[in-house]
Structures are given as structure tokens and as C-alpha cells.
Image (tube, rainbow, N blue to C red; front, side):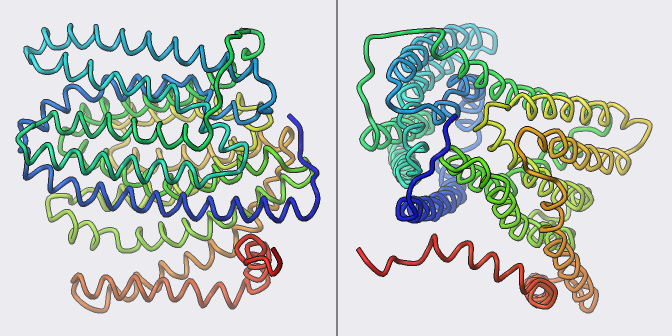
Length: 491
């Protein structure tokens, strides 16, 4: 891997491009969430539970295959100079062949599944959904090129257009009586539109050349990335089985929901910072990486720590307002899973550096160990009870995050102590915010209005305490961000 050492003017322009891309990506993520929140009740009313059920039988197979279809090349190719045509061309042909084979295999599995469950519509649905794998194959190269160019705007536009068109097609077809096929069309249109935009932005005709040796390093690193995804998937599946056996389906619902909410909230912010850090590391000087990592991790911590601490403080009230009285067990789960998920998301940012320097094996083994440890804790649930299991999972998350940071110190140069020092004051301020919110919630009976006011008081407390104890840190943050967001005074 080479590190860029361009002029100050080039660095300034590159930084502004990256900042603009980060804003665009954040906007696309928020827009995607809003679309899903609006679309779910509309489609539920138009389709009904039976049509959703048929779609639910077809989607998991394709979704699982899509998890591994790119072989991790989408992330690792961004490390490669675009002039190395044999690498990019070889990767394209491998992806095209692999996704074609996976699409065919998934289609054949759909036929067997349809016969086994006596659902005649499922095989054709799976066959149509499998076609999305081809759009995935032709999207990997352009995505990697855009990342290498620090152009996150192209990907953001692709996400916006894909999700908007997919939602529009789904609603239109549902109104016309297409049933579950409207959801199938949404899935395919989303992938197709995304692929079209990405290729318009960064298409490059592959050459008729192939070398397995040229892409072997990418396949190894990508294989570890896919292995990490599969390990996490298998771990979550095993956790759900043992939780169901130990506590029943009702508690499993709360457990799954709390896990999903915690991961979704933290990953939504964490993935954005991860992408920015990854593309920045690819073209930065090696000695600049530790400080860049520390600043971006602090930024993420300053977002996630107050958000999750406040959510912990008001978890019972929020759960009662949004979910109703049946979700009585979820408050404890959220109070443990939210902050530990935030810690894990902050720690996992070092994975972007590890991937960029081709040392992703460290994150892979730490992730495998953490997933296995979580399953062990859940297996002990009949003896340690619900509370013991929940806190045990939280401890595993924290210890796994610590292990990742410690083992990554030497190869990345990103030291744990400076990171912890930069996060200490945001953590103290977040704890003060949570305390103020808890005190406010005790003053009056629970209500939506008072809960919102209590959360606002907590947020204000965080801001005040940060100003009091970390004014220099805030000024440093501003000095780091300002060059990226201000307009240049000259053309």
C-alpha cells in the first residue's frame, strides 16, 4: 500500500471532497431510514400479513447469499491503484462468475424449498430475487473506485435513487394488486438503480485478462471480511436458539429487538465514520493515521456516548411509549446493550485501518472469539438467569473491544491510551447527562411530554458539562473540522 504525499492544495481539495461525501452519505442514511419507516405501515396495510409471510419465506435465502456474494472484494479493491488493470479485470470476472453461480444455486434451492414448504410462489420469487446478485457483481468495481477517489457522493446518490425508486415501484404495484411481488420488485429495482448510478459514476471497461495470483491477496483479505460477517451471523443465530429454549419466544422477541435496535443505532453512525476513515487512510501518510483515527473515533464517541447513555436513562419510559406495556423485559436489555454496542462500534473503527494495511486478520479472530464467547454466555442462561446473561453479554462486548484495540496497537500505530484519554471527557459528560435525565424523570409521573423534556434536559447537560471540562478538546475538534467544511476563498 502506498501513502499519498501530495501538496497542501491537493490535500485541502481532497479533504473537502471527503467532507462533502460524508455529509451526503449521512443524508442518504437518514433518508433511507425515513423511507423504511414510512413504507412499512403503507405496505402492511396494502398487502396484509399473508403476502408479507410469503415474501418472508423467499427473502432470507437471497439475503444470506448476498452477504457473501462479493467475497469482500468491494472493500479490499479500494486499496489497489486503478492503473493495475489486471487486478481490476480479474476481480470483475471472478465476481461475475461467482455471482452467476450463486444465483443459479440459489434458484435451484428455491425449487427445493418451495416443494418442502408447499408454497408454489416461493421458487419463482427466489429466482427473481437472485437476479439482484448480478447487479451486485457489477457494482463492486465502481464502488471501490469511488472510495479510492474519496468520492462518497456517488455512492450516496446511488443509495438515495435506489431506495426511492424501489419504494415507489413497491407502492405502485401493491396498489395494482401485485401482492408479495411488489416487495420482490422493490428489492430488484433498488439493486438495479444503485448499480446503474454507480456505473455511470465510475465505470471502466474490464479487459479480457485474468490472473488468480494478482487478486489472491484481495481474496484472502476479502475472505476474512466475509468470514467475519458469517461468524457474526452464525453467532446471532445460535444466541437466538438458546435464548428461545431458556426463556421462551416472548423474551426472544425482546432480546432480538434490543439487539437489532442497539446495532442499528450504533452502526448507522459507526459505518459512516468507518467509510470516511478507510478511504482517508488509503491515501494518507502513514504517520498521520494514528491521529486521524483518534480524532474520528472521538467524533463518533461524542455522538454515540451521549445518545446511548440518555436512551439508557429513559429506556423504560421510551419502551412503554413506543412499544406498549407488553415489552416489560426490554428496558434491562436496552440499558446494557446500547452502551456496550456504542463501545464496540467505537473500537471497531480500528478495523478500517487494519483493512487498509492488509491486517484484517486481527479483527477476524477477535470477532470470532467474541461471537463464540457470546454464545457460551447465552448457553449458561439457565444457571445465571436473565440478568446474569444480559450483563455477561455486555462484559463480553467490552472485553472483545478491548482485545481488538490492544492487538491492533502494534501494526496500526493507533495507541489505546490516547484514544481513551480523548473519550474520557465525552464519557463523563454523557454520564452527567444520563444522571440529569434520570433525576428529571423521577419528578413527575411518566408521560410522553415529560420524557421528551427530560431527554432534552439531559442533552443540554451534556453540552454544558462538555463546555466546562473539555473546552480545549472542543476547540481542537472545531479546528479539525473547519478546514473540511469551509468554502475556499479562492477558486
